[in-house]
Image 1 (spheres, helix red, strand yellow):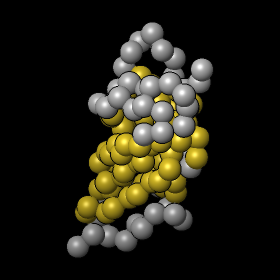
Image 2 (cartoon, rainbow, N blue to C red):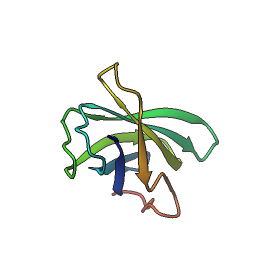
Image 3 (cartoon, one colour):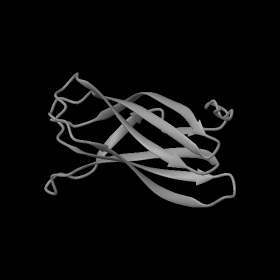
Length: 114
């Protein structure tokens, strides 16, 4: 039995000059149900500062199912490094993520919103 989540897509939309709405599409590619939890990530700003970011999921995800989680990020983002999925069920260890693990300014539309 294995529990694995795949990052199928990452979208970023500029809200204002210093806010970015980031949406992550997750697919349960394992053979066990995944309960509610958080996608853990690390945001690096253009000035070099780093902060932890969490994308919250309140849904159970059966094998083969897809969901989207989103978060509003602030600052001049250089990249976001997606680390793992931490279930709210404390008895289960962190779940590995497959797929696109990092997104940087080369891949995102960082033009300013009107």
